[in-house]
Length: 150
Image 1: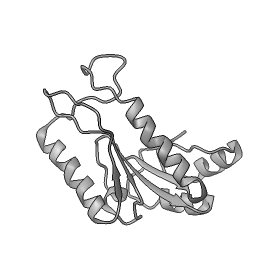
Image 2: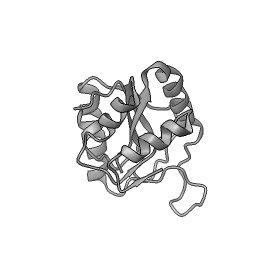
Image 3: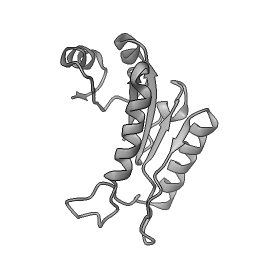
């Protein structure tokens, strides 16, 4: 799954702080069939190493990495929920599917710029639009190149 968040530049700090604290509060590493699970184990060591490589590359390309200080199970492969802020549109973490608990965040100044950023990828399985304005949300969602938008 590719998680890309594009936040309004004027509200960026408040929004990213909320995302970071929510990832800490709602994270629970539990057995994979537990219905209350938030984050499960990574399926294979090779995928765990790929996630870490992509996050490291994103940071090398200028992203800021945020991870909570929480315990993870000693058995199994768990990757901490990760928020990458200040992501450049050409960064590997904005262009590649990571398939891990990683959110890449970019800012925009206008809804048109947000649409351009969101559509600037070969991936487009799903999109989610969050806004304080329902009209803006519907207008932006209609312009996204994704199989599903909500």
